[in-house]
Amino acid sequence: MSIYYDAVTFTHRRRRTPAVRDVTWSPGSARTALLGPNGAGKSTLMRLGAGLLRPESGTVRSSHGRPVQDEVGWMPQDVLPVPGLKAWEQVAYAGWLRGLSRAAAARAADQALDQVGLTDQRELRTSTLSGGQRRRVGLAQALVSEPSILLLDEPTAGLDPAQRRRFREVLAGIPASTGIVVSTHQVEDLVELFDLVVVLDGGRLTWQGTMEEFLTHGNDPSRRAESAYEDLLGGDL
Ligand SMILES: Nc1ncnc2c1ncn2[C@@H]1O[C@H](COP(=O)(O)OP(=O)(O)OP(=O)(O)O)[C@@H](O)[C@H]1O
Image (cartoon, protein in one colour):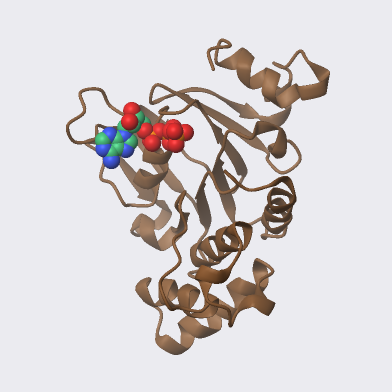
């Protein structure tokens, strides 16, 4: 199961130029790194995929014609603690908002917290958790409804190297049947975890291929992914 973007264009209010232009793409059940410079349209593309924005032209749909929200687990760039809520309550709340009963949401929250390695922190208020732990609460919120695809918007931005590594380990543990799209600037982090790379520039999909193909663009063996990225974006970073 997946989601399909078909000739999708979207312009934000009070903007003249589209943030996403004529994108046709389906992430499938692969692990995809979504790369692109600041302002390329990555967040907008993901928000369209999560059903939070409606395309101005084109369509975003899921397999089986179900609402995309039913297929997608979405993690925004900023995972905000809900004041006063414990980690498990925040995740259960996300499940309840997605239509689970209270009891089912509580069960799913425990399972999701286990998946992200936060079982020991379940009783702690989210506001007291570290930045890396909060991001994992965000991932648990995305996982709580058992989506077929996860869209994660810069999930490791601002984390220290140890927290980034922990987050990658958690992602690596997610079953292969779940598609994952991660937007990021930290390309070197991705090489082992991702199968596919998609490059967005000026709202357009300018390149897509396997991680192997992507890396052939790099000519600096000490930083293969970064140099491949620079090559594909014309060094204009
Ligand atoms: N809510 C908004 N209202 C108006 N313009 C917006 C809004 N959100 C994004 N934009 C504009 O849309 C374009 C694409 O932004 P978007 O955040 O999707 O890019 P991005 O690739 O995720 O960038 P970054 O890597 O900096 O997060 C940019 O020109 C941005 O200024």
